[in-house]
Amino acid sequence: MKILVVEDNERMARFVTKGLQEAGHTTDHAGTGRDGLFLAVSERYDVIIMDRMLPGNIDGLAIVDALRKADNHVPVLILSALGEVDERIKGLRAGGDDYLAKPFAFGELLARIDVLSRRRPQDAAQVVLEVGDLRIDLLARKVWRGPRAIQLQPREFKLLEYLVRHAGQVVTRTMLLENVWDYHFDPESNVVDVHISKLRQKIEAESEPQLLRTVRNAGYMISAEPPPGAG
Image (cartoon, rainbow, N blue to C red; front, side, top):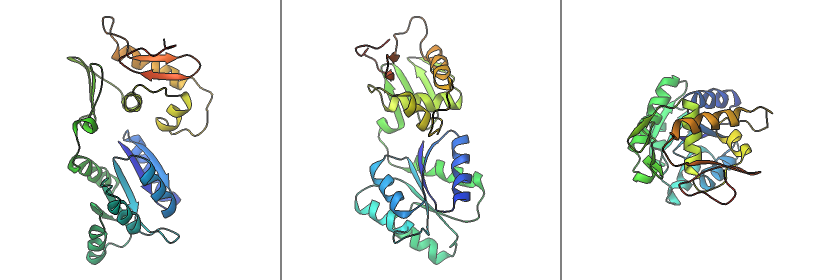
């Protein structure tokens, strides 16, 4: 899943984002209410983890309220040191889907995220991604090529999910480094090439049509139809 973490405490933000990434999720982080609102309305997320108290004149509840007024119903889990019943009620009435008081156990956070993702009304295109006869079940985290089940490592699954979400588009090496590995710089390694090669071997058996292609001097593309200049 793609998760937005809106948290001004850097230590808490690192703790949460690192744990989510280790669990196989893609994360973005915003440290202010203004940045959080911008990302929430400009990107598509499966879940937003929202700190209640944020610096500036836009707090977590204001962001949630703005999203709901814009008819954006992305599940929001509110995190707050304000754990009293009245504060929880305020958070839920503002449009939050769940409320978790700090401090919290990370395992509980993961469980609540899982519940929110399953509770959210979704159509088949959001739950299951498809390209040709390749199918990804995002909730069960399973992959098939026709009737053939494919076993992927967490990073391979994350890579494939990102490619399929951008099916028919050229995805650059930098885009993959930033969104699959969370590198905001080029580590000058062949990590992308190695994972692309392994993924190809798993999703393309000898008799199966090619889906994952290298677009010369551009990047990669997954598509049921070969684009010009792809190999």
